[in-house]
Length: 79
Ligand SMILES: [Zn+2]
Image (cartoon, rainbow, N blue to C red; front, side, top):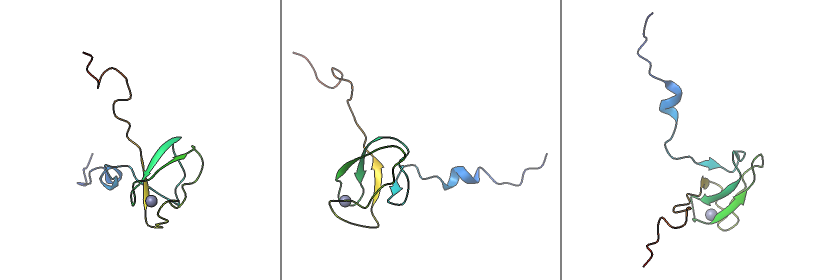
């Protein structure tokens, strides 16, 4: 075996934060946040992302909305 020194070319090209452009198709149904104005829109899997309705920025992308504290009872303290 000979190692060429290349280490996972596909992995290094991956960006840590998932961001989709308006030419990509939706991988998963759910809410996505516009990276330009922060507006939230819902997309369905298989559909194509569209240019943000709120800001109309063609260079803007879409990030999956992170829902923190989805489980009730963990974030709130009962007294
Ligand atoms: Zn926007």
